Length: 449
Image (cartoon, rainbow, N blue to C red; front, side, top):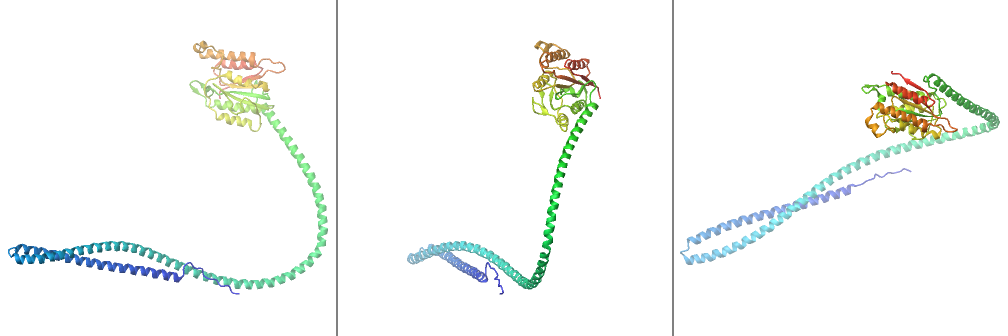
């Protein structure tokens, strides 16, 4: 059965004809009203001209009336006639004026109507153009649909021929399928035997995989043990190669007290030392890597106050040999030394960890304390800086001996090792040496670069 397609339409030709007729009627009415308005305007103009002529005649009559006042009888008669004519002319004038006013009103209304008609005409003209465009588009669409319909018919004929070919191929395939079914039945018995053999092989493979898995786990354990031994060997080698002369690098729970006062970037008050703070940071990292038994640590920076750059304030940080030293080096590189030196607050913060197993302190500094408890108000105001530093240093040593690092039954004293950087005064070296010697530690002085 042939399928017929009907062209979809939005507007048909009959609707377009009706709209065109309506537009023509509107234009015709507009033209008639315009013609009538022009005629009324012409009549109003004629009445106005007639009024002017009558007024001129009245004026002439009045002049003659004044000139003929001697002839009273004729003048009276003429006056009556003139008065009657004047009254008639006035009535005509009034009627003409009324008619003119009415014509003006009608003319204004016609002008308004003309404007509306022009607007409607413009709108209808625009709609007519749009309808013409839509008609052209619909016509083009209809032509495209007709072409598409012809293409579909062509495709339908091709599909019909293809279906016939496929039917023939299907018959051939059915014959081949029957032949293959017979071959499949012949191979099924062979497949059953092959499956049995495969199951046996899978059982053997599973046993081998289990053995391989056990061997892999053992190999992983051996590799981890090997890595652990390698790390221990590396740390032991670092301890041998990187040790500081005179300092036995040891400690399991260690606090690093790092001086970050303004002098850590100076040789003296007038000479800068751009590599001094870098040397302090690298020494800290080197010592930390060399402590083979290190398990927990804390880094405390001190100047006029103490801070914990790695966080975990007042508590231990677990040591990771792969990351902790690099993290400390990177964090201290972002810190700028500034301020005076308050060692009292630094040692006070460090010995809060004694009850948590603190066994070793490393002090990295370049000077004597110059602020902190230990002076009377008179001493703070009257003594020189060197004298104040000497008193503050003696106060810290006494506190370590009597309080912070005093002997406690069943608990060893905390070992304090000191590292001095580019010190210019013998008093500085003497203080750091005495601090280490009095607290079972060692002192080493770093030379200038």
